[in-house]
Image 1 (cartoon, rainbow, N blue to C red):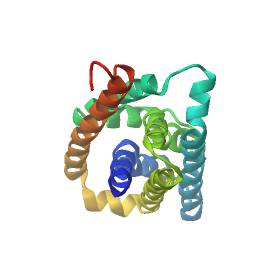
Image 2 (image 1 turned 60 degrees about the vertical axis):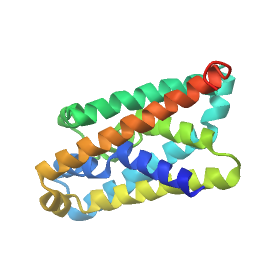
Image 3 (image 1 turned 135 degrees about the vertical axis):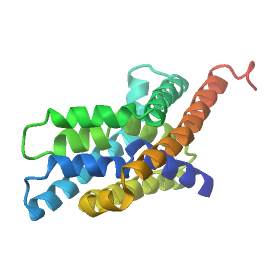
Image 4 (image 1 turned 180 degrees about the vertical axis):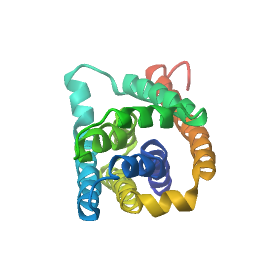
Length: 206
């Protein structure tokens, strides 16, 4: 149970990447007042948490309705997470986030692009569905949801402290942490694919 919580916590930390979201949020809200910046930070995290909670709890029934097997989603989700991991290792993900942020002209950035897709993006949605699918029973599901909520809370703190946090971490340290986390995410993504293949071909990969 603790292993599942730790795995979920690391997965959400890597995919959502609170330190990586902080500089984007800081650059998008440079002209906003301090009170409005705090409201946008909290609002974006609450919206993202709601989106992830929806897919974590209702994602599997949705797949069944669409006729998609969970094993297929595990394989697809693992491949998607592996692609994100490669982007993190080679710093492509940060470049795309900054490029996306540069095209945002509206003042309130809490819904787009912060909540969706920077916090609750394809990778975090896939992770929420995959991890809750791996949970056996309501207790383990609660552990996954608790890990997800913890990471959202960490993200909120990172956004609230975006300016000082960026000065403290620095660009070089942030790049190093991102690469290390990318390698960890690649290993977790590979495990998702292996689990999906084992479920699809139990006699071959027993």
